[in-house]
Image (tube, rainbow, N blue to C red):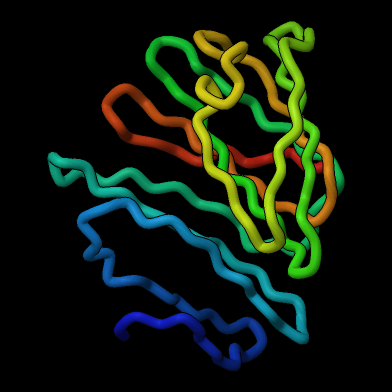
Amino acid sequence: SGPRHEYSDVIPGWGVRIIQTAGSSKTLLEGWALVVSTQPVMGTVVFRQRGATGLDSEGAVQVDASTGDKVLLPFDNTQGLVTALAVLNQSSSSSLSLFAVVRDEQGQPLMSSFLSLPRYGRGTFAMPERFPASQNLRGTIELSGSHFSVLGLQFTPLGSFTSITPLWE
C-alpha cells in the first residue's frame, strides 16, 4: 500500500500477484513499469479510467517479453472515434528511431514519418494529431524499429475506450 517506485516479490510457480494502485488521482497519470525476472513471467496489466458519470472504461495489455522489429495496428478515426498510441523505448542505453507508415483500408500508403524517443522514453499521441492523413479514415499503422513496445487505444466520442492488441512480425 502507498506510493512506490519499486516493488519486489517472489511469485511461486503457477502463482499469481495482483498489484493495484489506489486509483485516487483526479488527473490523468502516465507511466510504465519494467518487469525484471530470472524466469519467464506472464501477466495482464489492466488500466482504468473513471468517467464523470462514475462509469469505468478499462483496457488490458499482456506482459510479454516477445516482441519483433515490426508491428501493425488497425485504427479507426471515423464517426467521432479516435485511435491513440503509446510507444515505449525499452532500451536503457540508446535513443530510438521508429519508422511509421500509415495506410488506408485498401492498404495504400497515406504518409510516412519517423518517431524518435530517448532511452527509456515514451511517446503518446492521437493518430489524427500526429498523422493528419489518418483523420476521418480507417486503416493501419506500421511501426518498424527495435527494442520498443506499443499499445493502441480506441476512444469513443463519450470518452470511453478499449485497448487494441498489436500484431508483431
